[in-house]
Image (cartoon, rainbow, N blue to C red):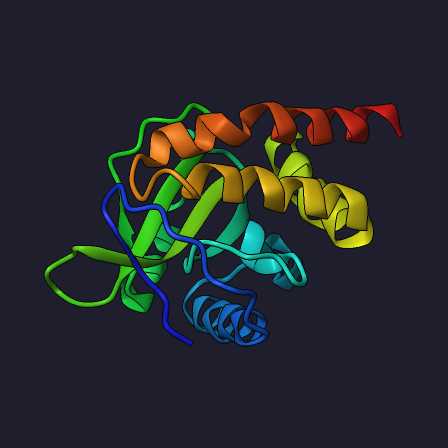
Length: 177
């Protein structure tokens, strides 16, 4: 299993069962350094969807009580595990990344800090669970992703925008339940 993407690179690789094992390994590292309940750290994103081609980066969501005043022990613990806080400005989350080496050119993992059990947390977990249980939607999502990478190998913002309508449609299904 090879993880990592350079800045703004977009590449999909075949599903790898080892992604789950890597998530579990990193989750345990985080739990060893941060006093947080086990269920507050979850595997999300395409590497958490069975059979899904994905960018070779492990996405992890970690629940916190308040996104505005994050406990320093969380930031210190993530740093000890090798995560660096990114300068990404998002109102509902704080993003950390792990890199292949000290040049910080290639990211291998993300930790998304979000408020536990609030809207974004619930949407992210629902998206993963819904696609894992719905083959038709999973195939549609894969085709959407492949449509983008067929013509592009960069532009992470454009890639995300390309998928936005689909993602929002799936999030809306959570509200319907």
